[in-house]
Length: 402
Figure 1 (cartoon, rainbow, N blue to C red):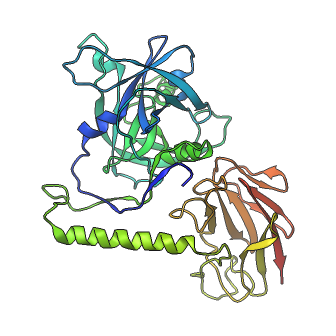
Figure 2 (tube, helix red, strand yellow; figure 1 turned 90 degrees about the horizontal axis):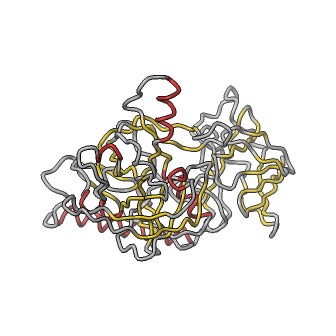
């Protein structure tokens, strides 16, 4: 599927910590020519490593080293090559030939506020006692404070950022932020916390940031870079003395049944035609509701190449205009799914505001365009009949009829 792997089984985990001994094998130390260090993690078997752009921005030669046992003084550095970066998102991708290690999966799902998170990295301050650089990583634990729409630099478009309390320092930049299932939910960035401390004149503690993994996922898909994507959220079970036991055949039977159902649903979904209707509304049929469309109104979106009505909204149905209708490439996050046409997971949303249809860009990677004008993220634009809408490689025309 476009070079990336999809894990479609239900992820269950107890309240115990992830297996950091295994996760550690996928986290690497990044060293640039100036002697500055950062953190990265492996996402595929090419092998390629994700880190922060500011870690590698100074140019010169780059090296990477796997996390090693603390008794090992020698660090085996491998040359790394910068193959892609986004200064705006503070992301970079390195290729490290000969780096033989497992990969970390990425999840597009946003964790709940207050859920536990874990940061793995190579903080420079941790070497103050050893007085030498080692390739053994450090792990910190915290909670997810909130999800925000913001930027690393004020003149760029906003994207999803995680605020958390898992302590990170200089050297942690580019390292993974993980959930309890050991899946990457974010890419830590120390630079913003340091700038905030310098600006305010006081040491800020307990406030750290990471770009959400969905930002990285959209970038990798746009560049056709392979990676492992989780398609079910991490579900925490009641605390047990051990992970789901292999002897507990009831739990394993339930997991097998759920897996079979998910596979069946995916097969059936692939057979669906593009002609889809928006689900029914929860609104009561009342003239006092300002967002209820009149029964005579019909909205159709016509694909420009084939002139086929991909979306047709019948007159006789009511719709969930309160939450809108999300268009994207993810079956889990979008109401209407278009894979393989350069759309973000949640690309744009159609929503009825004050009895008029609007379209809103959801901070998509390639942008949403109406009549040649690019929309600003999270700012709904009213639509009229005849408007031309472009999302990735998808070009549509809106037709409103009575």
